[in-house]
Length: 328
Picture 1 (cartoon, rainbow, N blue to C red):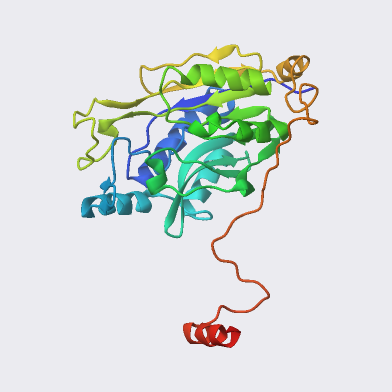
Picture 2 (picture 1 turned 45 degrees about the vertical axis):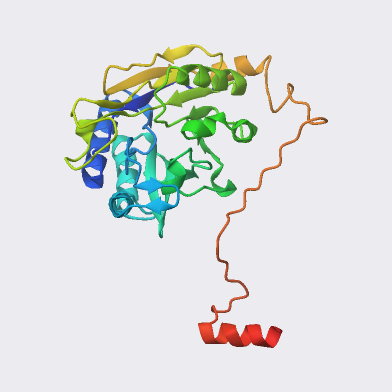
């Protein structure tokens, strides 16, 4: 029989462009959530590395500015690598507080950044990484696209945990892929603070008959450095992302209502027996599916731009030219 436990959504801002201070803040918030009894703690999208809302990175059609390139350089420097010391520190935060930790990060892989969600177990082990498949609008300028290799669900003592980031939640086939893996604790880190976000989360909870836990940043101009220049203005108290974190049960009941008043940690009790009660009359990958009509095919292979095979070293430029000439 699954036991009840408490889950928390953390509504807070990073210290923009200061990764070490952001991780220190994450440690404090995780400690506070654990002190309130939370065993699963969900942080917002891009908490580590930041979401510099209001920047355009100097881009116009056919043009990029020197100032925009410098903004990207600073953003690139704020990201973290996996494996790496910052990622290890996040594992220590989970271990030190005995929690399952889901946290949004900006991941640096070579010259490319990815918006990722990391899941750690109470031993501090990274048990899941999801890279956002489809950045939205200007996000595509600064983030790469994830592939099917990080669409996964982690089996834990609390239940099957998976993450879908922000507007990925509007991708019906991605949702179906998560439901097919038996997701029970559907984590939705986000920066979407619109009134329409809560009905979206309720729809997903009802559709998937799962608990949905969405953590959103509460971010003001004052959470950035003095030379941060968002289009919204320079007043420190200007709210750029207003929160709205929520938790919804498998029948669409709102356990944690959105709060737009400031930073907060919100908790709810999770009773996994509610999942089976919901599946009784709706299981979209089981008795409510029609595989004779509809089928979804998912490619979970990692996609690399360059692959070296056969155990041979890459050819030098001169060797490559010779090889090309022989092939002619």
